[in-house]
Image (cartoon, helix red, strand yellow):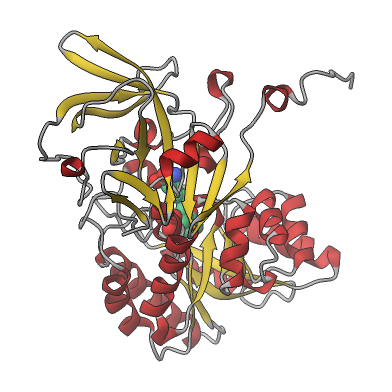
Amino acid sequence: MDDFQYRNGQLFAEDVNIDELAAKVGTPMYVYSKKTLLTHFNKLRDAFAAVDPVICYSIKSCGNINLLKLLAGEGAGMDVVSGGELYRAQLAGADMSKIVYAGVGKTDAEIQQGIEAGIGYFNIESEAEFENIAAIAQQMGKTAHAALRVNPDIYDPKTHDKTTTGKKETKFGVDIERAKRFFDSYGNNPHCKPTAIHLHIGSPIYSPEPYVKAIEKALVLIDELRQAGYTIDTLDIGGGFAADYESGKSPDWQEYADAIVPLVKDKGLKIILEPGRTISGNAGILVTRVQYLKKGGNKKFVIVDTGMHHLIRPAMYDAFHFLWPTQCDPSQAPVERKAEMDLPGLELTDVVGPVCESSDVFAKQRMLPSMERGDLIAIYTCGAYGMVMASNYNAMVRPPEVLVDGDSATIIRQRETYEQLVTGETEPQAV
Ligand code: LLP
């Protein structure tokens, strides 16, 4: 699962004691395990080895450049959705030919930046966007490369409505029925060459079946396009592979690969994957300190020093994140992470943040060990869509990020300061 484990009732990140780390760095803090990050990347690559995929790590899931450098060092490409993410990939020294660039609203400046950098593919989200990219490439005297993002109209009932993208009525991609027409209009464009098909059906996808359905549809399209004389040499199957939020609830990489690889092997296609959370999700935890205990009716509330401003997933998607005190009686150390825990001496508890919103809740009526002011709690599987979605709501500063490697720890992003909070506001300028 990951390298955040209890030893004799004390939580460690690899060989670093979390309480000792918190005493030095302060709370709240995001803590990442280098070993988990790289192991997950390599396990995914190994599972798909038969098709030798280009793995374009999805920066949007967790974009700290120090983590990107580690992945680029393993040969990862990157999936970006903005000029800012492309900038991060550039700072991390990523191979630009392994960059794929998605997103429905790429601006002219971002398109220029991508063409200038020599990225692998623009994932095309609409006919209008294709025309714009081709025109900009022509003006620049360069050739861009494109993958048409098709919308295969696949719905995975387990994916939250707010993270489903493969259905017809979403803003992403072009309806698969329109794809042939797209190639008839643009397939031979000299400035932007569409030679690839891109899919991304949602996130997280908890079983291989939706991928199988989407890829089967894409392969029919690829056959049709090839028969019509178009060169299609690449299939990008997107991201969405799950992380372990609860023990045993997510498929492992081999399960996805066993279903997907036979479909795409020996088809003369380069295969691209765009995983984010399956690599970064379990590689990070959010560590927070208990501020106060209080009662509300018959409920027991534990109020902590982090909230929806640092981890918005529970408020935004009703997402489940396992959480547990970093120190506990060894008999209460969790061997599994589940919504319903059955260990001695647990109490029904709500864990809430300090933000002035009633949705600022991390755990509602969960069985947890009893806690006191000053105790630390770890919130698990926060590596993906944690820090990248953090905000300054309520004028609270964003937490630091710490990278653990064996028994050493490095601050890879400083805690924000009040000065940084108001940067850009202190010297108004006339326009
Ligand atoms: N490729 C494309 C085109 C995407 O839109 C996404 C995610 C990915 C790859 C990576 O998906 P992953 O492998 O990380 O599941 N904030 C939400 C998730 C939004 C996902 C957006 N797109 C959450 O916290 O669950």
